[in-house]
Length: 251
Ligand code: PGA
Image (tube, rainbow, N blue to C red):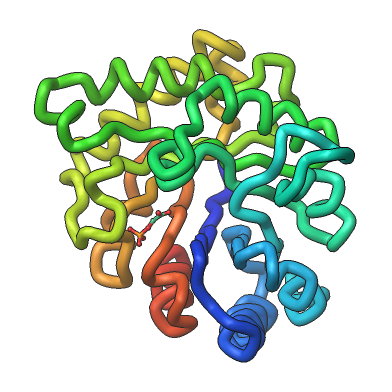
């Protein structure tokens, strides 16, 4: 059985004191659970990674970055390399979030290169895919998601190190979500695409998260879908009560 994963993407939020308070509350919540049935990741901004890694300590919460460079060292002003992220004690990185694809013109080939670099360093990668509203309206959701996966996911990766997050762009931060039937359909399709790349047995072990306006009141339905293995949460991950309420729907 696939283990569930609850991941919080803080995006460009939290000054020092807020990050300290939030990571403290989340790690206390997670550390108090007896044998949690799910893993918990949080992805603060780069500036807070070092502090947050120290705060979560041995609670079991995993700290991830929100992006990484394709390079490891050298003359790349402003870039942060996978080795630097790992050096702080982080164990994962989100790659190809739609806000990077849209605001920084990242294409799937860039996502692929970053994923290769991160995997070589030993980081777990959460690779994001998802259609825009326009692509959905013209019936291209499955085609877009399939193309993004095929071009973004490194084929020689150890599959335990890869997580896919399906995040419809139009659902991010909008309070709108696809219906549970639509989410399940896309997740099952993603698993089929992964099956074509890695074989069915391997594909059935890869965690596929749903992201886009996951809140305490819709989490239990979304997280109970057969091919939904967890959630990538933006807005609701900035409030410890909401983030833990979402996790608690897993029991
Ligand atoms: P949201 O963001 O939960 O605020 O919709 C999700 C994401 O962008 O990962």
